[in-house]
Length: 119
Image (spheres, rainbow, N blue to C red):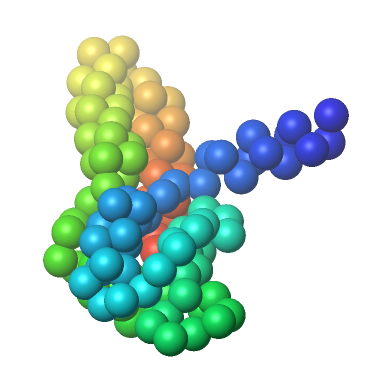
């Protein structure tokens, strides 16, 4: 029961990197056997190494700057925008600020999820 709950919570974490982007980088730079330890934490074997190492954070930032948003990030960003637009219209029509308050809360959580954590 507790394990299922923890798996559900960890699945809510937003993926900031597409695995194919990192696999491409690994192939270009000679790294092998890429695996994901946990969400947004990638490990592989550097050239000539016998122990896997985490993909350097600078490389991940460079890949992110080059490739942009993942599909999950794009979905949540567009959802936040649509939610805000609907909330503004609802607030005006209903003459009640609550839809805008709920949209603000949703947008705040979405923006916090979009923040890329440093390793």
